[in-house]
Length: 520
Image (cartoon, rainbow, N blue to C red; front, side, top):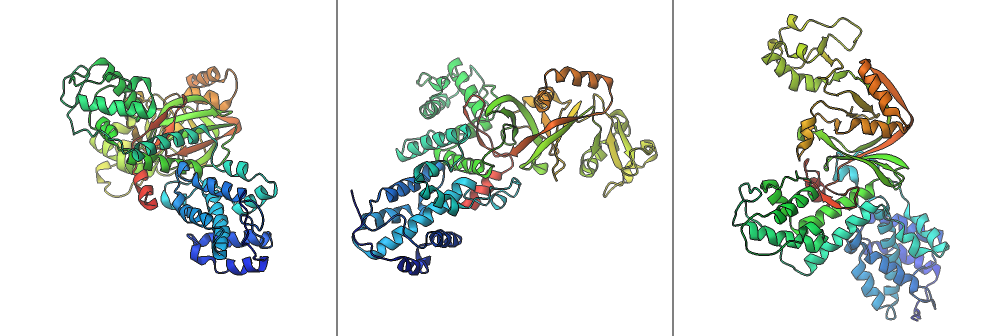
């Protein structure tokens, strides 16, 4: 058992050393935390105490070493320097001071980064509007030491969700692949390769799928390796599974998007996984017993009850030029047979050109024209307006009546937010078959709106009642007895209801922007 024999500093000496601590501070903003920590302890050392074993120090350093597994970088917490100081602990008093203070600083920084995120979310991703958790690591560390529960307290910092833990495992697999310097097959650009076709690149695709099998142990990827150029059934099935895993239509046709996904390197996947682990840290630690999780990039909505998925469906999100933001809210009520109060930007940019091409468009679509937002007033006659003369702005208010042509379908889900975003049904069901589903003006279109209504209202037999109201044709508001939390996020690496890891294209370029900011 190693003990310290050269630690002779009294509290006032440690206090004096602390005032000169800037030389080892990798992040200046962490210094006030270090001062507060030692002030609360009356400047008594924690990790390197005279005639005390170093087991607590070794536990702390071992935990700092786990930063890499969390998608962080242990170098940001000066692990190598702390390890070096640990090896010199019997040699110099200065090493003792630096090791003591540096370990505290590293733990406080890492604790905050694991609990609320390493990056400032609103800067790394300006479209992320979910507040990061406020977390003070000083009382946390003081309490853990006082309770002699340091190890268990530190382990509790990172998200315990299955999604976070499974993404960590995927990160470890890719890092092992890179560490072993294993070759990664790259494919050339190809024209469409259809099932049962013949193509010279097929042997390379077989190699690439074999590499995916080594990483994920997915049975469909365990195919026979040969030099055949025939795109046979086993490889077609493997490609379909790969496409589904990477957010593409699982049609077995190998085109540009599939080749792009196949060619993403382990280093690229590592950056993607690190960023999405960070996004999970940006979320609140507890999302609720019942909540909705909308993944914009994955085009999925999942309803969660008591930690288990209760409903999963495809969604349609905003065009890249009207991208859906990330935010949190609560679903408060549903509207059956809704009117669509058409935003001015959509009226001007999307609908006016259609009316100009076809003077009967508004009437055919059940769209009424008003002078202002007084919908109780008499609507204007579209035929009395010179639509061709409108060149700038849009001087009218448009509203679409409920009905089969209504863009919101038969039901919409209301959630207070500053972006005028809501969830709704849609008459355009065929769009759910596309792989990249960016067709809305920012709101979220639902594949299974009635199933979601049943979840939201949380009441047996409610769906038949809603259907009856729809058939009546009247616009009806149905309040939830208890608002349902909803989190709308942008995750390009995520876990489905079967605990399988999936990847999605960076449809809005938010990964690229955040990774550039982080310099990962």
